[in-house]
Length: 245
Image 1: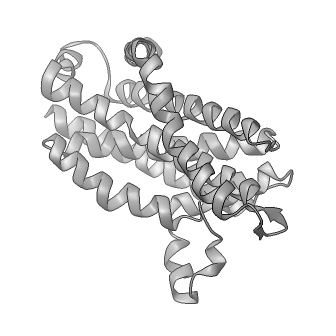
Image 2: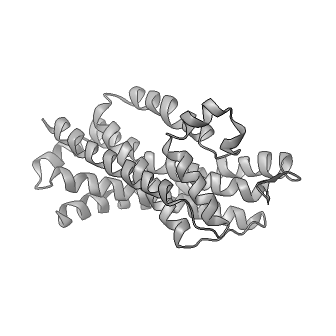
């Protein structure tokens, strides 16, 4: 199992390394625009939860970017399935469904970590230093695990890139704006807060932000992320098995 997972992961890392010089600028553009437009221009004199808006915003951007970049592994899987037919080759290889999912999930998490490092550097350029303690990285890893696992499962279900774009538009994009990334969840009406509570990104952004301020995040939020990631991971294994059949 380990050899199969490492082979899948190594293939994705080789592709990532070749594209890294193009990916890093693309990972920088959106966070930079958010930091300039929301953090610097609009929120320069705004205080949220006892911190400057810039300090509030950067952990939210980290949560959002770890979600989007971990989920982006689904696009790589679709390209491999629809154009290169790599998935058919993996079917013929002695790689188990579990090993395949592990390799792809780790690749998605690696993309997320690299994107987060870019945001941390951008934060330093804007004079914002956050606490990257063990709780911070635990929340980041759990968030990346949740959405990388979700990505693998959905990548096995979609039939085209158009379907993939549709999923991103209706699942990832709304979550990015409603998950407490740009403003506190408490600003929503009470009924909306109850609905937003079920979004994994809400727990991720809250946990990452709390940890970045040097405090321990809610254990319940971390458990919810871990359980959600485990469920998505299990579903992904079943989806890979179904796609093979």
